[in-house]
Length: 198
Image 1 (cartoon, helix red, strand yellow):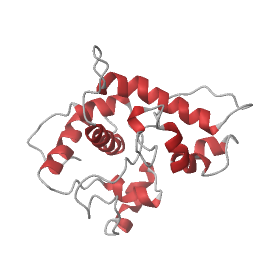
Image 2: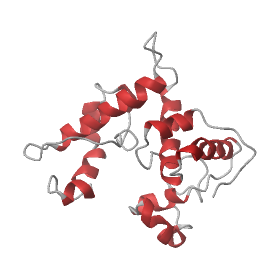
Image 3: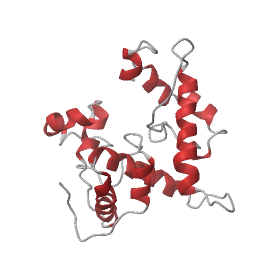
Image 4: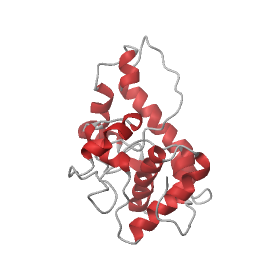
């Protein structure tokens, strides 16, 4: 949203508002199976480089391009059987994988460590432990990943449905938009003896 606003392509919060507008999301349900019944597009707006024309930029076309990229680069490659063209996992599992991957994306920048971090978080969830991902503390306060380390202590005990330090389970929605590499690392996570990562 900030990037598009700074370039004069949209008004401030227009992108975020669009991604959270249930009426607009419902209109997209019939075109994208993976967002069926979703209340937000967060998690499915694929992070990539997009060529846009500033002369005729429209936010709905941009969002559709991002959803199409997610469909082609993630959904069709990881969640659809190549031969039968059927979904390999239930919608609930896909939602959980994308949700957890959105946390891994922001918690671990090193691609080689993502599957390890995903495995640790999965193990904590499976054993009914808090996953304690700091970025989930910052998300409802619209604090970016880069700023989170400076503000997390201020909000760490603030109750929120997104705060995985105070709540068990995953947040109600993804907290960002994970890449193919991160979704793949989360789906095919590494099992270790660890419970914590630095």
